Length: 363
Image 1 (cartoon, one colour):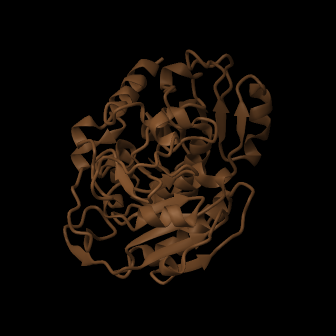
Image 2: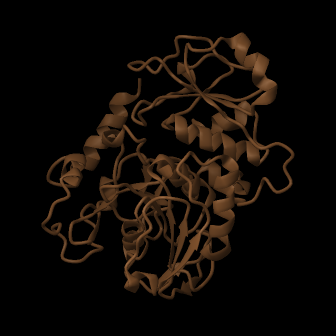
Image 3: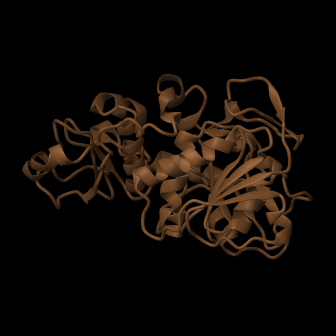
């Protein structure tokens, strides 16, 4: 429905390099990118897509100084050469030289999907060091199955100018977190090919071609950025999320919660409205994968009065808006099913469970 707008944005991003960024990145070019340093920006902020808020763009010229953990502060802190590495799964082998400049903590060894409780356990650990003066950046290593969920969760929960990088390979993620250009971008995701995305718009496992990368690691371990540092509009300083729902950055909202959010994902048309209403008392929310692949429109009237029901598409380029879903349900915007599930979990954990508030955040 709004596919043409999003497609235009993707084409705009493609113009930042000589060819389509996806095909360019997947080749893992052996020659160093056209930059002469590892932090060169090869496209200025005016080429950013509408997904990004270029007014937040900041050129980082001094690797020893970054703003502190909240974007609203104008003070600066001295950063030391320490990268905090937290492991929840994935490939964690690091060179000795890298280990000497990082703090290494194993939280989990998880291959299955992380639940909301485990995500907040990770958040609590990361938050304990994220704002510390000696922390230059944070790396979270996870399995490929959890890459999208953990990357999006980190982007919403951590409002920090210091780099937070989620990846499946510790060496790759360390390279990004230790790079000057990683600051002031929100949480980042590095996939198995060394392609770097915003955590807000990182791809699902089978949808890599439908997401817009912000940088890459080449075969010589050089990091190249396609855009100047900026925040996605969803988590920008002036976004509804950051201005009206500052409690979403609480890293331990479940501490005093009686109920842990449970948000299943179902396919549109696979369940009846009566069935959903009958189990509404046992779940906190519901994510529905829309069956209208070309129009984003639902073929059913699946909704519930007592819990938020969010409709999504598997591709972030297929925007699902309020007009595309049944009355009483919520259009998930550009969120994929996994991201919508995580976002509902965060919202409900912070006592935001009414459909109106969630719809305002997503549309």
